[in-house]
Length: 190
Image (cartoon, rainbow, N blue to C red; front, side, top):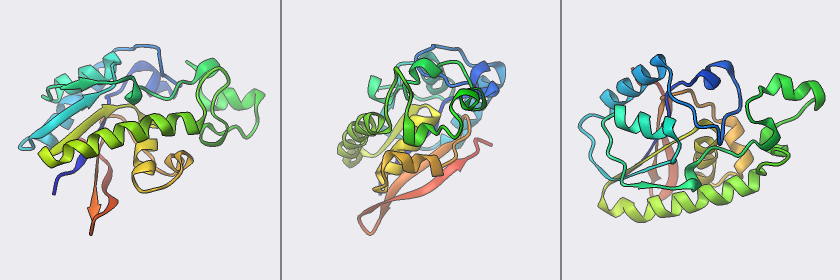
């Protein structure tokens, strides 16, 4: 049975530093490029009916280095828009907003969890339509893919907060007796 394969982009300077990165279009670090190549090795032998990517350079470069040919890009796979929190870390945000959680509060000037969930629901609907042709890869970002995982199994967008996702890791979304299920999560590229 066909699966949806989630591929988080490789490391960037900001992901290594824990900075929220949505619309800032960063390149992969040398480590991130190596991570992307390793992810490609794990994907060898798999064929994809479609490879859908975020339009950000870090996602597109990860796909390229992993040996995947992107068939479609969509802003719906872009990272959570962090608004005023772009480029800063969670501990820095909590200096002025103690107890702040992206998963429940969203970001001022950016997106709410519900808005991100709506985008990822559209991506998952599109991917599910393509599964009749084979596996579908989604190349994107940490928080957006965590929301995708949560939404796939029927959780609210905030459920993504329970799904850790490291750079350049792989996840597979499939079915258990016809019910959407997570087959693998946060599998390292090596």
